[in-house]
Amino acid sequence: MKKIKLFAFAVAAVAMLGACNQKGEVAAEAEVASTDNIYQFTVLDGDLNPVSLADYQGKVLLVVNTATACGFTPQYAELQKMYAAYGGRGLEILDFPCNQFGQQAPGSNEEIREFCTGTYQTTFRQLAKIEVNGNAEDVSPLYVWLKEQAPFAGFDTTDPRGAYMDKMMRAQDPAYDQSPDIKWNFTKFLVDREGNVVRRFEPTEPMETVEKAIEVLL
Image 1 (tube, rainbow, N blue to C red):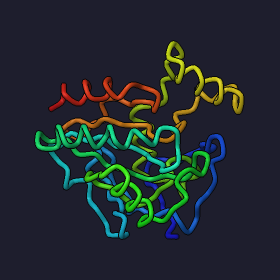
Image 2 (image 1 turned 45 degrees about the vertical axis):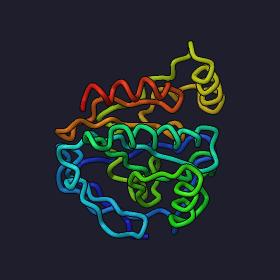
Image 3 (image 1 turned 180 degrees about the horizontal axis):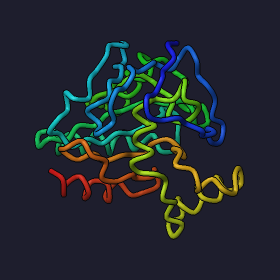
Image 4 (image 1 turned 120 degrees about the horizontal axis):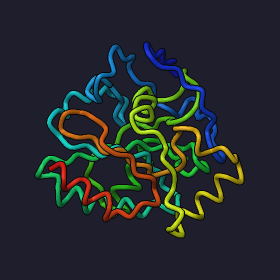
């Protein structure tokens, strides 16, 4: 796997709860010269072709790290529902499969794509499998930037799902909430039409909350 050098950032994060390096599975991303907004990044699609995020200028973006065998996997259906409703108004969903959390996305890019389109009839953009946490040589530069723009702000522990996630994470690392790292599958970053990160949503947040935030930007 091609190693990635970041010009302005270094990652010192430990992958949470079953995280593991998926070298050989994780697609490399192009080197980044500037990080003023999300348009400065180039990623890879499922066929390992480069995709400049500058192609999405003027769009509202929802960037999601996903998995196919997770308790949150049914959110694919809700994401597709939102894309069907708002895609025509400028919403784009960028799906980045990631196997770092409980090894819940073990398939190849093609296998993951077939699962998503066959099970949930997804039509939004699915990119190559990546790592979202870890050392600077393996982690996605896009996710380094996203986490700096919107660090982890905690789970809503008044919600049973948020309370469960907090308990699970704290059992592994009492100071887990001090890190900006992605905590689990289906964490979402909302990006406005100027390429700026507006908000981070943890996977336990209701999809209705995500949808309302998207509507404000459209």
